Length: 226
Image (cartoon, rainbow, N blue to C red):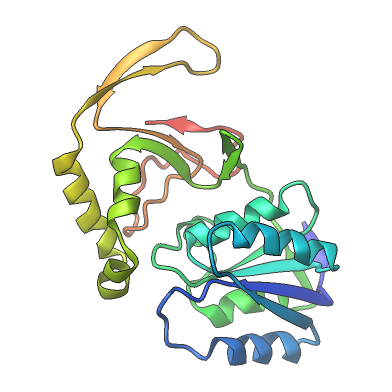
């Protein structure tokens, strides 16, 4: 859907990613140059993105932008669910899987330009929910949460995306196989054995063209189980 260029944007920034770029200068250069009034908030802890997004909506933001990794993107998106305010992702993390799935450029200048023209286009995507928490990518048990825990900020700063590969190798060595009882769409339960069970809304894994499955889509109305 096409929309006229917004008059007011609120940008939520996670300062943790160690990228040495003149971020505020670049945002001001693009947004102010397009005649867009913009404001900024900084996250300091978990769930700050949710609260800041809701506050931005209450204060009249027409678009909420987020600069950070997938965790920050998910927090901000959670704060916008139930509103008609679109989310602009400015990739600033290590994996940037949501941005990659949506074909958003990893170059900040190009991402900013998505809403600086006379019009901009939005895309509606699916959102998963588990225990009251939303997710855009996937949730899992077994090695999946182990990879997230093992890939520390220090590792990501040093190795980039390879931090997740190293973490996955270690998790595979330490995670025993488990039995999973699975019920899909209310059908009869079946049992499977494996080192992980993943419920995916996105197939992107962040390593080249490697995916869980090319059939997994962010806007196909389904969650896929692996």
